[in-house]
Image (cartoon, rainbow, N blue to C red; front, top):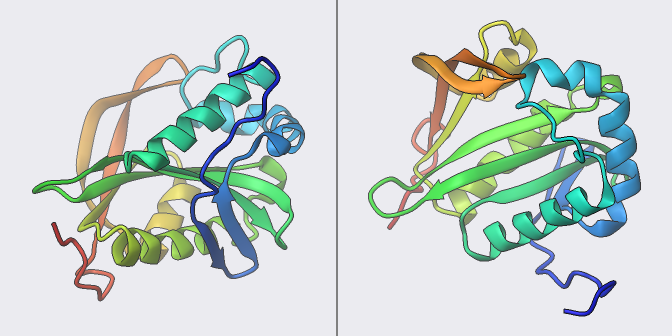
Length: 198
């Protein structure tokens, strides 16, 4: 690939929810993404792994876009950006660690810019990705892990029908510390779907 050449990628899924659209990240999203993440750093940092020194650079974003495209192409994960009104970036959502065979599952993760919290965007995004996971990807299970203090995230999961299954001690390294996480899951059967075929 020539330096400066554009990244050619499969556009991936485009999902619609109540007032939001989800689609794959593109290099054209970099200015909005870097601005939103920078402005929201204090809000996001307590719930995320430590940010790399080059976290908000164009080069780091390019690596992220390539990673998402590769994961999607290989059915290993789906990184989606959330847009309000079809054009304003408000956050992101991932279905990662897609496992096939006897498992047929994936892990849900998400983030919202600080100014967009409490407006129903994440509930709408999760509501849009669940049918994609079960009806299109034919998954059997969606897992999610959340720190006990993250009550807003817990509300999103529980309103979407996720069931709390237990506590994983020192489960993920968040903001430089190993943190306990509550484990949640939603099954295709819970969502009234028969998905999960091999």
